[in-house]
Length: 102
Image 1 (cartoon, rainbow, N blue to C red):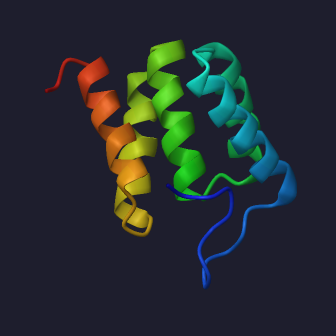
Image 2: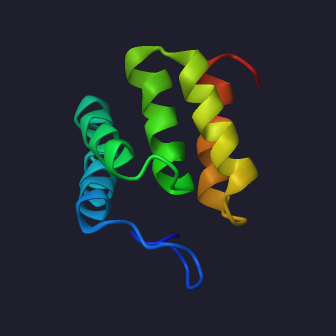
């Protein structure tokens, strides 16, 4: 699984974005989707072009806020613009399932 920062050659996340992303992941994995969404939003404000941040923020936009328009744009963009990463595709699939697009 990906770490909090980008791979060599990519731009690393600012420290505030990396810590918000990691806290969001911790909250998401513990079942706190709303808390995770808050943290992913903070990460997105600090690193809006990072594919991993886009992916997680987009996923929780759909799950928590029911904002399918922006959520789909973000998760699809993360897959298109990011390096090959199964985590991004899994999030994209979770969005499709949440929207009934199996």
